[in-house]
Every structure is written in C-alpha cells, then in structure tokens.
Length: 371
Image 1: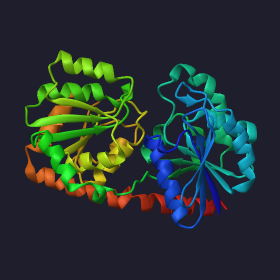
Image 2 (image 1 turned 135 degrees about the vertical axis):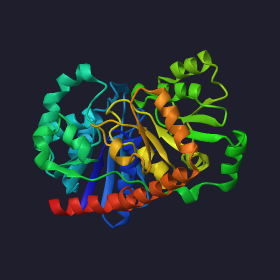
Image 3 (image 1 turned 120 degrees about the horizontal axis):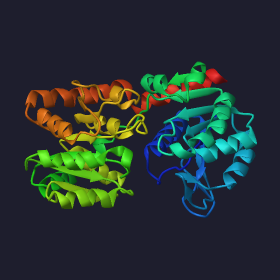
Image 4 (image 1 turned 45 degrees about the vertical axis):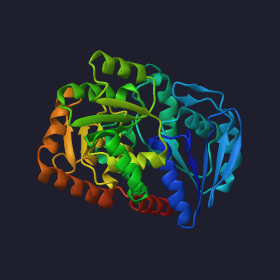
C-alpha cells in the first residue's frame, strides 16, 4: 500500500495542517507502509527531502496569494507521481492542490481531508466553489475531524455519503520538556499563573479578546502568546493603550522544543477563536496531552466545542468576550479541586480520543477499506 500525502506546506513550516500531515506521514510510515509527501516549498527552489522512512517533494513557490502558494510545478509533479501510489490523501483547503487534481485527474484513489471550510476569503469563495464541488464529487472519501463540523458545513451537505469522521491526533511530547527550562520560565514570570496561547496572530484566533481579558485579572496571572502574524501590531497597540505590558507578553516564534517547555510551565491553556475557521484546534489537544485545563470558545459549528468538554476538561465561553475569558480563568484558579479534576480529565480525554496512535490506526483502516 503506497500513499501520497498532498498539501500546501510541510514542516519545518508550522501550522495545524502541517502538524497533521507530519504525524500521519511519520505514523503510517512506521507501520511499514510507503507514505510520501507532495507539497509546496516556501522558496523558489525544488527540493526532495529524504526522511528515515519517506520522501517529501517540495515544489517551487513563486509567492503566496490569498493564503495559497503559487506553484505550477505542483501540477506536473502530481502527474508524474500519480502512477506510483494507490491513494492520494489531500489536505484541504488548498486551491492549488484542487486545481492540480482537476487537471491531472489521478488514477489513484483520492481522499480529501477536510480540515476547514473556506471562511476568511469569502469574497473570492464563490469563484472557487465550482472547482471545490468538482473535487468533492471526484473524491472517493472525505475525512472530517468531528461530527459537529461535518453536520454544520454547508460545503459538505451534498457529500455526506462520502464522509468519514477521524478526529485529529498528536503525539504526547510532555516527556520532552526540560525540567530546568520549565523552572526558569516559571521563575522568569515570578511564579505567576501562566495562561498560554499558541497560534498565528490572525483575526479569527480571537487573541484580541485574550489580551483584553488581562484588564479583568489581578497580578497573579500573566498571559503569554506564542506566534507571529499580521495582528501583532494591533495586539501591541491594545497592550500599550491599556498599560498591560506586565500582564501580557507576545513571545513571537519559538522552537518546538521551547513550546514543550512552555506547555509544561503554563497553568492553563486558552484558545479564544471567534470563527469556524478554527475547525478543531490542534493546539488544544497538544495542551491536553500535557494535562492542562482548557479555556476555549463555544461555537456550535466548529469542532473545538466537542474537543474541550465544558466543565470536564475546561471551560467554554462565548466568542468576543474578554470578561468571560477572565471569569473562566478565575473560576479554575479559585477552586483547587476543580483545577486538579480538569487537569486529570484533560489528559484522559486526550489518551482516549486524540492520540497520534488513535488517528493513525483509524486512517490506516480507512486506507485498507478503500483498496
């Protein structure tokens, strides 16, 4: 059985979809199957990266437009690689990959891994819909990460007969944190309760409301936000305007190893996203693997409300509400038994539903059923 993972980018380019592609490629390859990767490079050069058990083909990129890598070579490379694989596993949304599928029309079986509807580019979406619908008709299966997202996605309503629910999974890296580094982080922030958030600084992540929540917190808390993006200046302006320099820190990019240390050092984890562009929240399950309570927003049409179980693994709040975020932090902090219960439940829910092993087993089962 030979599989080609097909998506926009691949690590070291980081992001939720890239992380899923990495976990899938690593996991499926370790089970003894061929699982290579076709993606765009982030630069104007073609590279073949050979990992221990698989190869990553990175095609030439001429830049980014509407969150899409402009890489015509991707089409040619798909045409060349198609005969070598039994299944092509496409990670969406990715208009360039969809165009390549339309032009090449591979003979291999095709899976569309539906990470999210197109939400932010709503003005250009109507021009993309005919291509998207063609791809969904052409595909053999569509993986969706939660029942709630599949049920509320207008794009998938005519293709529910193809849908397979496979929740995302990630490896547990809690043992990789460095004890001394963790202690140094906690000392640096004077042993305050660290509220950690990780993600690109973009509007749908709702970091504006997380920053503003600091206005309602006392000095026992500090908010640390990891990531970069176009919202950085706006967030810094909010911090400056409200004199929150001692309560909120933007840490920018950090390495994966540093991220493990911060996940271990933090008191709880927050994902304050405000639109269904946040379809699942890989960052949540990473934090759950570190046994951290979660504060997230409640969106009926997104999977994050299912991932973080309200009152069990953490607290859900309304979108766009800085005050509710602050109240949730204080509710957890003011009840030691509640904190301990949520910490325990968070890890248990991760182990039951969101481990890398669970995701890989379900994915391989789907592959086999298609052949």
